[in-house]
Picture 1 (spheres, rainbow, N blue to C red):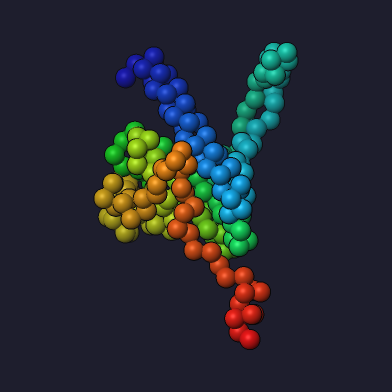
Picture 2 (cartoon, one colour):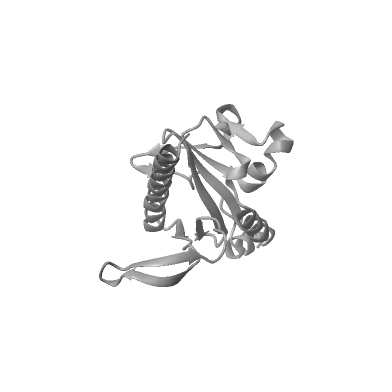
Length: 184
C-alpha cells in the first residue's frame, strides 16, 4: 500500500471513528434526558506548541499522554461507568485496539466498582457492549486475541429509533434507602 492509500484510509478511519463517537454522544444525550445517566466525552490531553491561525482558532499541538477511554459517567444508581468506542469495517474486533493506558484505566476504575466496557461497531450495522473483563480475557475465553460475530453475539445491542441503546439491559444497583426499607 503506498503512502497516498494509507493517508486516505487513515482519514476514512478517523472520520468513521468520529461518526461512531457522535452516535454515542447522541445516545448519551437521550439517556440523560431520560434521567438514566450522565455521560461525558473524555477530552484528549494535549499542549499547545504554537498558534497557527488565531482567527480560525488553529494551533500546533502535541499529545501529552496516551488516550484514556473515550467516555465517563454515572448511572442513576450512582454506578460509575467508563467505556471506549471502537469502530471497524472488519467482521471482528481485535484485542490490540486498546492501548496500555486505556487498559490501566479500565483496571483502576474497575477495582473501584465502576462498570467498564467497550461499545463496538462492526460496519455501522452491528453494535455490541462488551464488558471489559470479557474483552481483556478474550484469549483465555475464545483461544485468540479477537472476537468474531459469533463470539460478540451475546453482547449485541440495538440501534433503535435513531438511538444506540448501549445502556439498555444494565441492571441497576439497589439503593441503600431501598435496601433499608426492604429490611424493615
